[in-house]
Image (cartoon, rainbow, N blue to C red; front, top):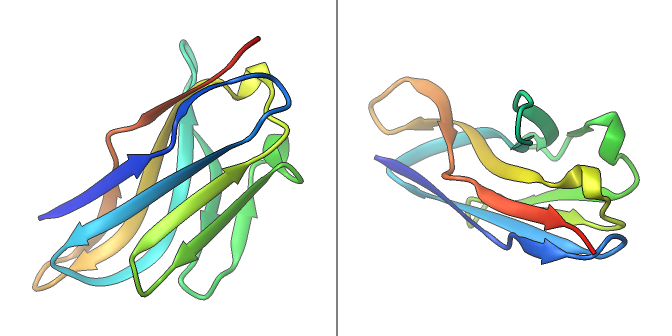
Length: 120
């Protein structure tokens, strides 16, 4: 069993900052890519940012220069620092991990989601 537990969502004014964190736990053998996705009402889930085990990152064009993804491989955690937040960043944010658990196949796992609302 694997769990991805997110924290750090909430309500923030435009121009503000939030930091999301996600911790993976369970019988994990190896974690490959970790990332954050988001889904706004009426829209498809989209990639926000991802980071490989070696530290290579990938960002959606809409968040480049404002969001920073990081991870701690020793603690199996990934974080997303979100600055200069805009109303259009409002969405449910989901943690994602491409990982392999002991004696099982590699697959994707999702967190339960955390709400981020940017509003004055």
